[in-house]
Amino acid sequence: DEPSRELTEWWSGRGYSDGLLEASGWRSVSQHTIDKMLEMHSEADLTASGLIWRDNGQLRHLFSTHTVITPYFNGELDTAVTGERPSVQYVRFRALSTTVKAKYLAPKGTQPIIYGFDELYKYAMQYGTQAPLFITESESDALAIRELADRQGKTAYAVALVGGQKSQHSLVLRELTHFLSSLDKQAVINIVTDRDATGEVFFNAVASTLYKVGFNADNLIKWQEWHEQFKDVGEHLQALARASNRTVKPDNKIS
Image (cartoon, rainbow, N blue to C red; front, side):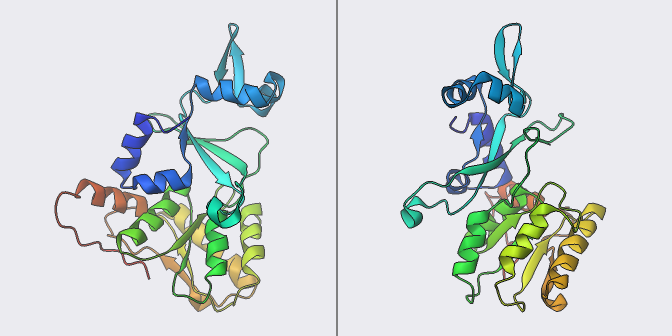
């Protein structure tokens, strides 16, 4: 479905622009979503995938508390560039409510890919310019980086590694190193981490893996260029959104 009011209000409160919402393809889950899926897939297949279940004769989407679909595309989203629509290779369902124990859920048996493949393609095509690459822990952090860069009139390419990203042997991390292996190993890579213990683990896993395939250790940057009172870049962007009615000088610099 199109973004619900709940999603657009949450999105705006986090500081993201409407254009970013449209470009990233986040959508709402509803009964209508199920009806559309059933036009293309059998009930048995959708039940087996873990997306739906039958309750007293009525079909329901399994993630009733997780009302947002976050799509993971396999390529460039701009159809004007490619001439064709990209396909969705993976999805995560997000709960907007803070009372839900698990923020994210995914269909059973699925394997995550890199969030922001189109960003990687554009980064590779523009490699040699000053537009940097950022590797983040979550989709929302990747989008926050893009939003902050846009507010400064700059370009930044941001991707996210989810699902086992704390391990040097995770598939998404191996996928990333395979893609970057063709680029200059002197490239500066910004690794965006939360200010907590899991952020340290994330940085060490990503940095050590890139180092092992030849990247210069001095160019693997732990990027935490936001006000120290905030745990992550998303919280910083959210604070800027709350202060949007007064003049705010951003602490972070996309460079």
